[in-house]
Image (cartoon, rainbow, N blue to C red; front, side, top):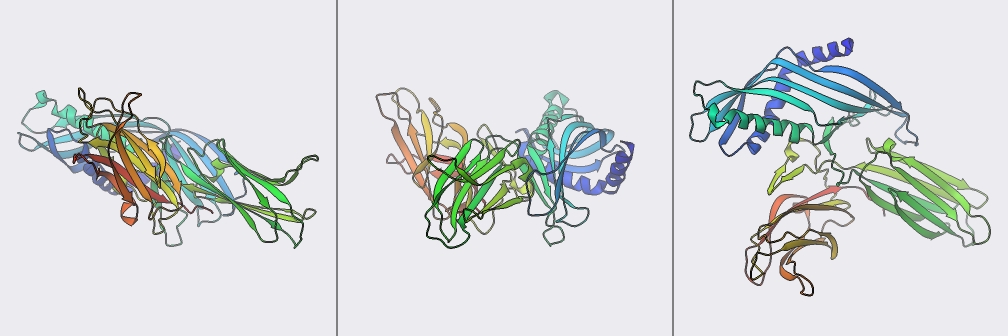
Length: 482
């Protein structure tokens, strides 16, 4: 490992100042969002990274040849499992701390040590410039070990208040919970040489959210004109979800489209089949395609396949696309919601074409619920409708007029602009009594609603109560097929 650590050490010493500036910009902004009430402001000042550099301790490498045919050229995926350690006893980051009822003081973050297990996945392709790395994805396979000291440097000693512990706790929460371990760091270099630059996106690790969208378009047609009428069966299966249809063969193309979201690309496959079903004799297979989705995860590659059966005068084209969904970049703890979008490029994945794509709705809480029951507070729940269809019904929160829900849903849509989103709040009642309506609010979606974070939506209510649903709406464009 010595040669690799020597290279890292050389790079680190040259880029020390750049690393310092990046750390300062990100850490200072986020640290002030999460400081305890007693701390009014933290300003990061002088930084000394010290002589220690990141050290690689052990590497396991696996080379994967894609099992599917990718249109972007020859590709190869390399998976590296490694452990990275930084032990910097001479590291020091001085910060100015404004504390309520006390003069401004100076504290120092010292003697930092980080031990993290990483999985680095690199996709090599002949479709990009030298050295041919199309993209790199860095994943922390477990929560990192982190230790450091916080020292108060001023003559005023107020350690008895535990201020040093408050600062240390806030810094650790920011570094580990919010910056280091929320997901996967995806670096796409595919745009290099075309004026697109390098894109860095934080990917989700939350299994409840979509990891991506798979679009499949199957086209069947006669090779030459004929008056014969034949019907073929078409099916696509992904993650135990299947769509199938019957198409009549004609000279003009007949299409079958399927859009589906997936929670993970890992260990998943897509199976597409086209066949003619016969009652007595054996079915005639026109084409079958099995694709390992793990091979399609990076750089949104495509798979194209054509099947020709000249005896049956049939041609079949299959086009499969994988679309990664970047991080929503929201985090809710209790009633508090934090937006991390400004820290990373490409977090919401939106662009000028805002019609087909994925709609994310997050119900955070409801405030000011009127009392509906005579002896207790209300038992509210929220139902969300998209274009008249129920897409989310939260759990009931008992005996609470300011309930916190923290529930979310994602749906595929081809018509975001002009669609209607309705939030309806009811007070749950015990059967045989029906639930009592509290109020509802309707939102007609458009460009202004592409990203709304923790936004209050005032309910219309006959009682005149000032009740708000606090929700986030994020729309990410995906070119769906029809």
